[in-house]
Amino acid sequence: MPVTIPLSSELEADCSNCFALCCNAFGFSRSADFPIDKPAGVPCPNLEPDHSCGIHRSLHARGFRGCAAFDCFGAGQAVSQRLFHGTEPDRDSQERRTMFAAFAVVRQLHEMLWHLAEARARTFDPDAARAALHLAELVARTASGTLDALVRTEVNALHARVALALRQVSEEVRAGYRADARATVPDAYPGADLAGRDLRAHSLCGADLRGACLIAADLRGSTLAGVDLLGADLRDARIEGADLSTALYVTQPQIAAARGSADTTLPHRLSPPAHWGS
Image (cartoon, rainbow, N blue to C red):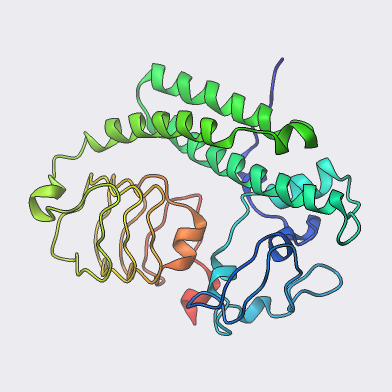
C-alpha cells in the first residue's frame, strides 16, 4: 500500500493546531533547564486556556530553557488533528492518557523521518538511498496508523534499524574528509565526554561525535564539516561563529540549547533561535 512520506514542513511544530501536548504530557524537575517541578500529565502553570504559552516570548529568560529547546517534529498537530480530529479529550480521562502515549511515539517516529530525509539527501550510494527510503516509508506508515496501533508500536526496534542506516550514511560522508579528528582530539568518539573542553584548536572535520557530551564545550569559530552530531548534547556549547552547515544529523532542539550568534552557520533546514539575539 503506497504511503506518503511527510515533507520537511510537516515535521515542524504547528502549535496553533495542537492541544499543547508538550505542555501537558511530559513532566520535568527543577534544574538548570526548568525553574519548577511539573508532573507528567499535568498542565504547565504557564499554559493559557487557548493552549498558548503565557511566557512564550521570555521562556529562556525565565529559566524554562528546556521548553525553549523542545521540538515535537510536528507530532503535536498530527496527534491533535489526525488522531483526535481537533477535539481534545476530557482531562483525567483514559482517552487523554492514551493521547499522551501516542504523542510520545509519534514524536520519535517523526524525528526518525527527519534524520532519514537527511540521510537520503547526503548519500551518493544508490543502495543506501533506497534503504533509507524504504525505512522512511515504513516509519511513515507506522506514524499514520491508528491510535491503538501507535501505542503498541515497538519503537526501539525501529530505532535500531534507523540507527544502522544513519550510521552507514555517516561513515560514507565522513570518509570524504581527510582530517583525522582522533589525531588532534584523541577522545573524539561516539559518546565521548567533552563537556567544558576548549576544542577551538582542534580539527573536528569528519569526527564521529554521536551521543557525545558537548555541554559548555567551546567550539567558537570551528568548522564542523561532516561531523556526526546525532544525539550529541549541545547544551550551552559555544558555537558562536562556528560552521555547522554540513554537520550531520543536527536538530533544532540541539541548536536551541547551544549558545550561538548571528555568524553561526547552520544547516539549511534549521533556524537560529530567538534567544540568540538576547
